[in-house]
Amino acid sequence: MLDSRPTFDGLLAAWGIAREPVTLPMLEARRHQISDNAADATGVE
Image (cartoon, rainbow, N blue to C red; front, top):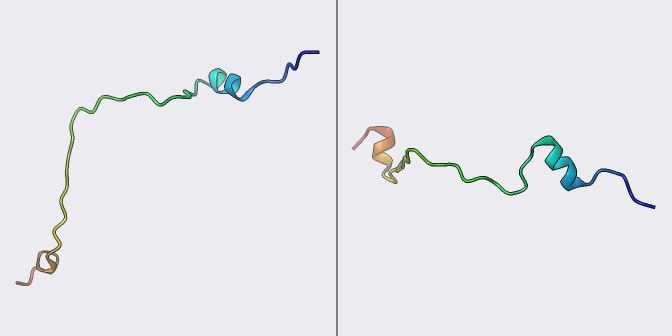
């Protein structure tokens, strides 16, 4: 007798969920640098 219950992979496919993540293009990269100097945060030199 065949098992007609849905499989996990079948459910993912039916719901449109990708098993492997897609690679999205990165249009702009930003880098933020935080200073370790306490004077920068307090404004006191």
